[in-house]
Amino acid sequence: MKNIYLYLSVIAFLITIASCEDELIQERLDDNPLVGADAPLEATPGNADFTSYVSFGNSLTAGLMDAALYDRGQQSSFANLLGARFELAGGGTFQLPDINAANGFNVTLNDFSDPTNATFGRFFLDLSIPGPRPFIGGDPITPFAGDNASVSNMGVPGMRLIELTANGYGLLNGFYGRFALDPSSTSVLEQGLARNPTFMTFWLGNNDALTWATGGGVGPIGIDDQGAPDPSNDLQPNALVSTTSFNADLQGSLDAIFGSNPSMQGVILNVPNVTLIPFFQAVQWNAIPLDAATATAANAGYAGYNAILQALTNPALGPLALSAEEVALRQISFSAGNNAIVVSDNNLTDITNAVNSLVSLGMVTSEQATSLAPLAQARQLKSAQDLPGLIPFGLPAEIVTLGAGAVLGTLADPNNPASIIGVGVPLGDQFTLTVDEIGLLLQRIGAFNAAIAAQANSREGLVLFDANSFFTGIAINGGIQSSGLNYTPDFSPNGVFSTDGIHPNPAGHAILTNELIQLINTSFNSNLPLYDASAFTTVLTE
Image (tube, rainbow, N blue to C red; front, side, top):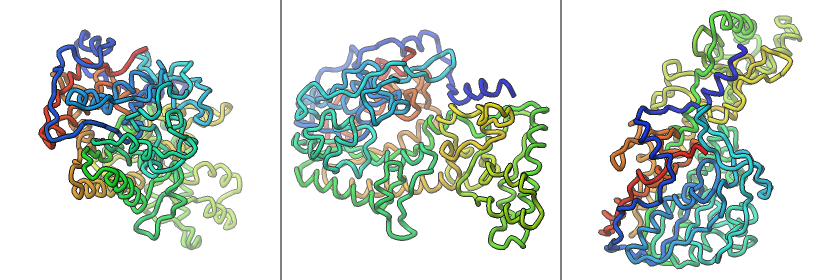
């Protein structure tokens, strides 16, 4: 078992390097210009009015990538790329709230409550792992050096739909506070509307589901169909927002936007199926490699646990007794080869009280009960073959987050070699999405997207871009072709995602922008030129 940490570290940041010629990889890693040299310099607006373009959104709109907001990401954002094309068709200048940061502030590793302490900058692809590695020495979040009133990109990393209209949001989110008209009173929506937009893009709702998902589904859940939604739950930053609140926030925001300009035109984007992005696909459910001897030893260690589970079906335990189905689900076993990760699942019955009852019945010793405490809600992850509930979602197995790579294979107790996390000690629930959590997440995303589609259908001048189908297609088709090149659904040198496993890289933004341009050209009879995606980098290796 001594090599398991090294092995799992590689698994956790697994990069599928698609086969391609060396010169193609080098071309994508070179510092290419933002726009291809042969890009057309003329465009026509058709029926669209690009006079003043404002983009409302979160980190995807802001251009955050590699877990940081930095210069290259901002400049490569689909909003900025669209703004440049709109300018060719008579639109005004699209102003970014320039971050002036080469490496940015890592939102995953730094303490967000102290934006001046930028210990870590963006991730980069370290090919020796291969995987992401952060720059040591990032850039603090500093005030925008330009005119705050001129900012056109209202994309704010971390923002949820409910926060678009929150007055004083700049005091809570430094990425907005740095360019807010008044951090203590202005809302993002209010500031965007002060630009008198004639055309907009609106992409919010991702974080209303994604933040809960990246935290392994341990955050609060806004309830819809089981009773009135709990507003206190929906307000929590790591909540899975209720459909009721989401619908109200969406309706209110769009009413305000179209109320400010009844002739408003624009594109609204829906919420992707986030379970298919690299953050949830890079670490496999069965990432535990064991030889035959180690598997035998692990099985011996779990023999008592498995036996006690069977004892917990005893009717004498009354309501504390486990069902045969749950006992079968919770049995733990290993064999030579790759094995399912042992996890803690908060949807399982906590067996603590039931085990204590066995102690009182003389069936279990107090010492055995104490040793079982870490396994109170333990089981192994399952594949679709063993858990048919996954099949309707089209997923091969339950999900492990990318963040699990930091703890899988390490020792929970440095003095106990048997306390390997994921084998002898369950991986924390915050690092997994079980079948129940996946089902709830996808149900909620479906409800969000139904509301978004209804709004698009009911408002003249507003067209829907199906970002869900776009990103799902990339995942299930194994990539996408653009500018004559094949791009893969990962953060390899051929991929469309950045090294955080969530946000597109510059090439990914260019491909997304081209899809949006084609929709705009069709919907508004405009003639905006596409970008050459090959002129954009994918991931950076330094």
